[in-house]
Image (cartoon, rainbow, N blue to C red; front, top):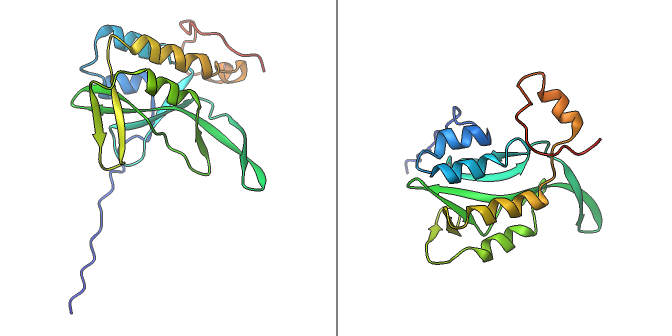
Length: 178
């Protein structure tokens, strides 16, 4: 009996972490100007991460801050995921699930945002076995505003670090003190 072994070719060139600007330039080509502008409000406090699928991204805080989380008998520290975005045929979708593992946990407002979106235009992503609802000009404001309510601004310490690499004068967001 002949045994065959198949290897899956990994895409090592795919960036695993994207800034909001990179996300819009790489995947947001079909977004309206209003959607691009509202998504840019998440910059610089948020980044997007992805695993194997380039079109499924988790929204996280730029500093990857960890919070206490009750885990079994003890306590652990985990990072919040503020939403999972999916791009399909140039359209933006917000998922009902997020990456949750020993390092990350879903922020509670993810369900609130998902439930507030219309279920008229849904997408079933069979590889990850989850549903996602379409985000467009009519609901982007609600999505971004809710994320901004719970995702903290970047710290002064982090702002000082990144100011060495880019112009921070256009950061129109509050900075939390250290």
